[in-house]
Length: 168
Image (cartoon, rainbow, N blue to C red):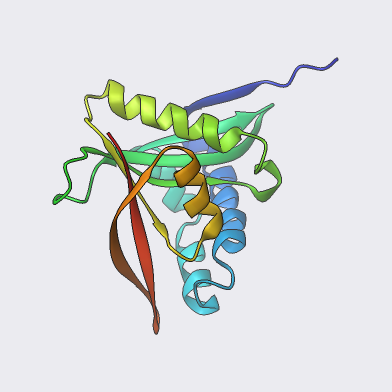
């Protein structure tokens, strides 16, 4: 029987290309057919290797899930940007490569991000997702999040509703 190592840890600058690739494939899979093609491609292309190299140096925390030496996913987190809400922490993004979805790695990464925010003194947590993204919506619901807020995001000519999930 072969043992596979799974590690959640801070992303490193030398991993920027791998993180950019996770971002690219995860976003195209998650938002294709929801966000119009041109805005989606522009958003993906902006987050190139250089962008991710800078992201590994802060100010938000960047965690990666490393499966046997392959960056399978990432999460970014920090202080909540929703100042009107009492939750102090926020997971800004959490994404996995499509081939690593559905096997529990999202729950592991989410749990580590949530624990890190708590250890940093954040009371409560908020996560936003597009309402039309059924996969994300169901993931946060099954992780115990409560759907308590909504807002709008503009993508070119398309206006999409976003939902705020909270954990206290």
